View 1 (tube, rainbow, N blue to C red):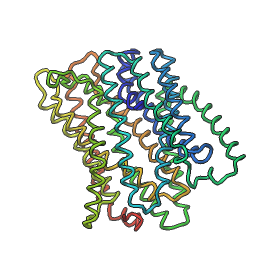
View 2 (view 1 turned 135 degrees about the vertical axis):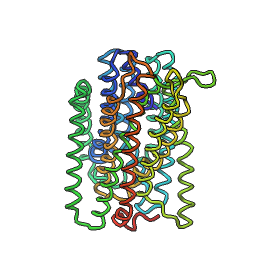
View 3 (view 1 turned 45 degrees about the vertical axis):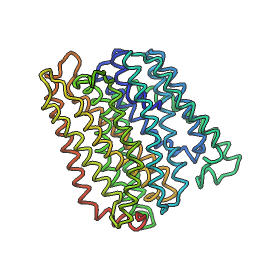
View 4 (view 1 turned 45 degrees about the horizontal axis):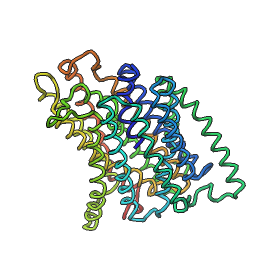
Length: 461
């Protein structure tokens, strides 16, 4: 819930409350997304090695609470330190959630995919509450109360973790195989690493342009390292599945780069170029993202049930085909926007239904790639690399956030302009993005036979 508040409100908060330009606000949002997702990779390394996943999860939640409190001060120092604390907490503990869940299943357990779909739907309940509250407080620009409200979900999560503490113990991690003195020593080291990480994140947030190059460079190095690790892996079947993982992960980069436009360029497009009057109500921009959460919450369990029934009838629905379909839906989500722009009224404002169709298509694509991506780690990754590959999968979203920031900066600037003037620029860019997504979907579709051979029989189930 706290992440949903910041994700949907940071650009508006920076422009309307702190006086940032749209360009600077998009840059900050790009770094926010990059570090949130990029730190998942770091969390995948720390969790289970220096701190247990449940310990790291609780520490991350505490950091988020402190970060939101500082953000509520509406001061520039509060912004950067608040974001540093929140990002460190949020970035590290999401991997912990997925690792605690994936450890409950064997690689061939048919319940794994359904579990992640249900988990993803549950997470989106928090998103729904966060987006809804953010829109309510946005109408009065009461960001102080909004950021204090954002801590509520974190506090509840801390209490629930304490109640179910014994059920969330690590299973078969490097840390769980060490002696108690070694575990305590690593706990101290892990806490020191976290303390050192905070000022580093804060400094990088204040230098967003340099930080974006750093994230892209780091992503390139991680890709090279994974290619080397894959090439040197001795078990042929596992090496083939790791190759499939690399291909699918690279293909997903296009999807996530377009998906991450929601809190940046698409948010400003909705704020300035969309008719936000619906049935006599003024719609807050954050409420638009509730379309996504409703589709996920309702569609996740339904999709799990649909897949189960189709597979029972012998229909092949596997990871490669779902990834290709997700990109096709994302392309459709981009394509309906220039259609709506072309049908805009005399004042240039786009009818609200077109953003609904766009988010609906994007959300279906998300269901086909995001929970499936989490679930594929347990299927494709060797045991010793699961944390690393889970973190890498999430880091892709961080790199995509930087790329989405660049795409948002390529969009027309709405400040001091009108919808009639900016609509052509938006339309042109949305068409190009739709084409890019469609081409990537076609490439993955052509690679489906190869990917199925690489994945092998472990994919069945």
